[in-house]
Length: 87
Length: 161
Image (cartoon, rainbow over all chains, first blue to last red; front, side, top):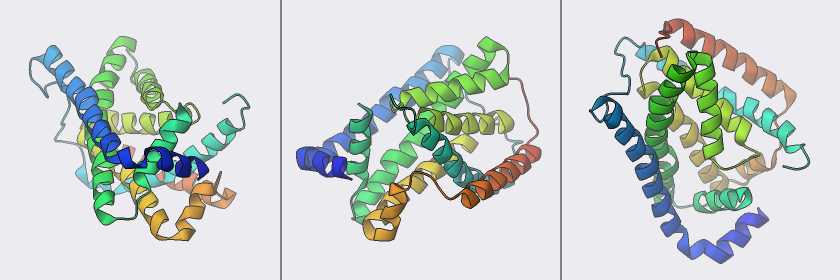
């Protein structure tokens, strides 16, 4: 936590600026970029994305289990990676 | 670089107020879930699948690009694993809302975890843990395998990229 404390002492007053910058970055770079690419490919803003209506919406109930159980697996992977000395 | 990114993220998330939590939820869960999924799964994954001709290779490449864009070398593989899972959700369902909702759930859990850590000391200890006990890890692998298989079975794969 020392790195957070040091960071907050130095930049704590600018956090809202960072938040706003990150939101704009996400919206413009990722969202805007995706819609622009979709438009360039299909001539419609959302034409390249698939919204298959026959997908089983009831299967969404398994998604939280998948996402929660992938976290410990990722932690194990990260633990072994952090043992690599030069990282 | 990655230390600064981590400290910045922790600094922004580590606030006890409910209003800040709501802002953080929009910042790290709602917007990234929609925008990143549109770009990575919606555009890049389909383009990589077209380019390679193999869905699995396209999904894995997209997963690693997804990991690289987060600019944290130590977290590259875990984020890539998450990206690959989100990629398969899109590939199996052919519906972009599935990876968007999954991504929102995953990031929302992290935002909630940081919020709880500021409220409760015992949650703070979780962050210090390098890895979970082997029993929990094995249980997680079993739950992951079972839930993924059931999800896969429920949505017949359509592999037209």
